[in-house]
Structures are given as C-alpha cells and as structure tokens.
Length: 177
Length: 270
Image (cartoon, rainbow over all chains, first blue to last red; front, side):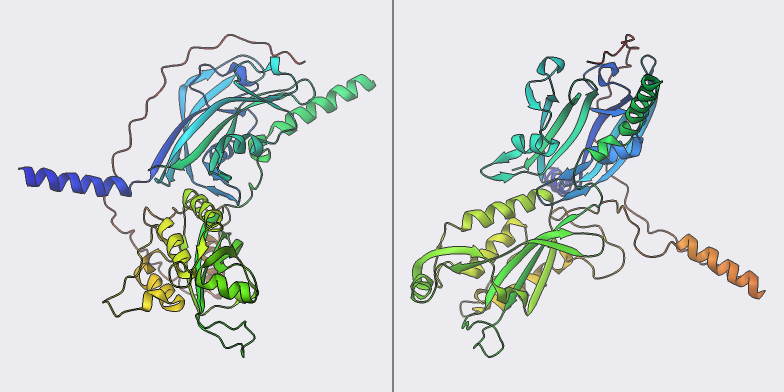
C-alpha cells in the first residue's frame, strides 16, 4: 500500500512538473476604467479595443531583450455586462496558458501615472506622465542590476489634464525556487 | 464653426486613439521572440588561420532572441584572463578574469543551441555580470567552467568524465560536443513545425506571422488547376491527429461573484 502511494506521489510529482502554468485575469471593456465594477478586474481595456489583442497583451512576458507572447484564451460571461457611460461595461475572463513554470509572479497593483496625483484614486505609487510603462515595470522588477521578466498591463485609463492618467499592473517573474 | 470643427476632431482623435491602445502603449509589441542560448567552441590555433594564437581553444556562449526568421544575439560572452601581453600570461595562471567578446568569436567549430525561459534568460544575464569579478585560472577556473555555469543555469545535463583518465569534458570543443549529445532533445529543429519542449525550456508561443504558404491556399490553387485541366480530382488523404493523453485537470479558478450593475458615472474631464 505504502509503495503504491509512493509511486503515485512520484507520478504526480513528475506530472505536476510537466504542467505549464496557467494564469487567470478578469478584464473589463468600457470607456473609462472607473465604471468597471469590483477590484477583481485587473485588466482594463477600452471598449473599442479588440478583445483578443487585450488578452494577447496581458499574456506577454517582457524583458530587457524582447517580448514573448503566450497562448491566451478569452471567455465571456453574459452576466458580466452592464450599462452606463459611453459604452457600458463588459467583463470577461482571460486565461494565459503554457506559461513557463519556473517562476512565481509578484504582482504590483495600483501604479498610477498622470498629470495630477489627486486624480489617481487607487494608487500607492505615482509616476509622472512622462514615465514610459516599461520604466514603471523596471522600477519594481529590477534587483541587483538585473531586471526580472515582467508582465505589464493597464487597468485604468482616463483622459484629462496634460496627459490623462492611467493605472498599471506589473507582475515580476522571479525564480520559483 | 471653428469650435464645431475642433470638437469633431477631438472626438475623432479620442475614438481612434483608444483603439488597440493597450498594444500601442507597450514597446516591442510586433513580434513574439523566444530567448535562445547558443554554446560554441573552437579548437587550438597557431595563428596561421587568421585567428589569435591559442593553445587551448575557447568555449563561449551567445544569448539572444529568436525572431520569426532569424536570431538576434544581444550578448556574446566568454571568460578570459584580463589584461594584455605579460599581464594576460600572469593572469592566465591565476589573476583577474573578465567576461568579454573577441573578434575570433565569429568562428566556431561546434554550435549547440537551446531555448530558455525568460526567467532563465535573466539568470544567464546575471551570471555574465557576476563572473566579471571572478578570478581566472587556466587550471581551476577557465572558459569551460564559465560555460558549465551557464549550462547549469539553463538546467542542462553536464558531460562528466567516463573515468579518472578521461579529460574530454575539460577541453572546449569536446565539452560543447558532449553537452550537445547529452541535451540534443532540447535543440530546436532546423526546419518544420516546432515540437513541444520540456519544462526546462520555453514553451511554444503563438506565432504572430505564419511561416510558409497557407495550406488552404494551396488546396484552392490545386483545385483550380484540376478544374482547368479537366482532370479527375485527387482524393485528399487526411492524417488523423495523434492520440494525445488526456490533459491534466485545470487548476481551480475562483470566479468572482455575479457583478452588480454599476452606478452610472458621468466621467469628468479635467
């Protein structure tokens, strides 16, 4: 009995190591990010954008040397639709598949970029509007002179002021061990 | 009149600028690239082949990104004794080492390539920097040891001596050749579709640009040709897809509760 359990454990261990990681996100299509309900939403996309392009951008791992796009699937939910504003809102689930399983992701939410910090309602860190998104990611993911691979996407966006303002979610891929 | 025109232009700009902005705001968003690592080695040279004199040969690595049709190498790195002339000779015994590239790195006798994950790529970059401070010693810490360290970061199997008299893993060309033989299952295919790789290597990304002609286009062209020549249609042989093992159960995904309709917010523009 014990030997069988050990064999099963070994099998599961091998099987588990061969499974590539999946990563779920809740994305929301709307005109302005603040209409998207709840804090489960971590990817905001303008309602005129392409759903697959948004999923592709969310499931891209970037580094100093390039970007690698991974498989992304989208799943809509008829209950996740609401009215209001310019085009209402429509949430959907994005699942990134076949991500490498040698890293764990450290997420950093609520990075706000804009002309005026008061316009950033959820931010914990504020960046000037001249700061490119890549620099925002690097400010989180660089350690000992090496920038870890990262995912970055916008969850909030609004016009106004000198450059409007936008929120970013940054995920740093650090080695799993 | 002017106010109307400006309002219309602003409206058009807002609508057009918003489309696909999530893609446009991020750099390097055109082509999916894969981190790739190449091990190379060359044998000893007496200087009569245009290369610098080297009695040991050299092992080094190239780190880059594989694009759709070519590879872009950002780093060519090998471990050398620092200095020139007498200093280099002294440092060869034991002294300051440096990770650098030389002109001779353009030619190599053995090449072995593997894919990396983005995390492994970052680890290799970090290793390049950390070896810049290490001491060089031809006997204890040389270019082959540097290449071994890179191979370990890439989770490759290292060649070991068969017995106490086997020195082949200590020489650049035989080391890279041994590395290639032990890990050839990770080597990308030269042509044809990419196969799925092991957990240690990166996974196949969706290719944004299809390479080669479209099969549907070929079939259509063949049909037109047959119609024109009044030939009997050739039956199409359809190869059944290979039977794959059942996929593992997906991880539990916590779905958010049904979202309540949000309050209607009239966005203010500052």
